[in-house]
Image (cartoon, rainbow, N blue to C red; front, side, top):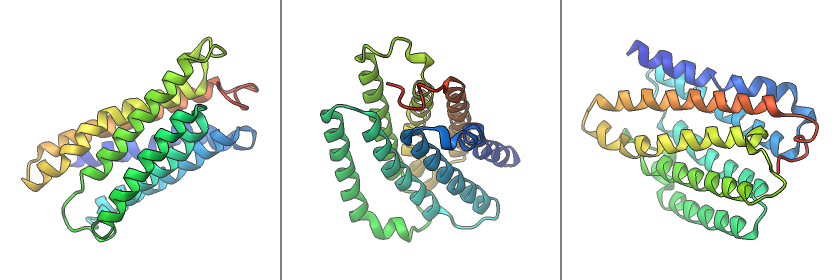
Length: 220
């Protein structure tokens, strides 16, 4: 139990790896980067609230639902700015509409959740993020101006997001199944989820090493 909370704390604090350089360089960054820093700042706050309430045995499923909803809509806005093609933008619109319909149908259980974890909400969000990241890399590979993609900040940031949400998709999808059966295996899965979160923040932090005057404008 103690190890579980320790690694959850470390995964939460690891957001500071990209946030500290992001806050320092905030005024010099492009609009897309500023939006990204604002997103992960709020995600960090909500994640810490989730950790704090968990530590004190406070019911916090509504906090996690808010975290998933916020991440979906905010990252949808970010990727609409990063993806230049109209087809990509229309794809994101369709995903947003589908997600919004689901939210509207489940709004009561999301705002006032019982003790049952809603696995479909974070799984939907994770799947959407995976698709957004794949679209980003596809657009970058087709961009002749991006010669060394691994030397761009967004490569490392989107790689971190892709790794995290690819790993979290199945974990979050089966969480309700194991929790409803009182299976402690779910703790092992969430420890793995926290590890993915730490790796994600490390990769995001690496991305800030590649920020220079040209990348402040745009990385593609």
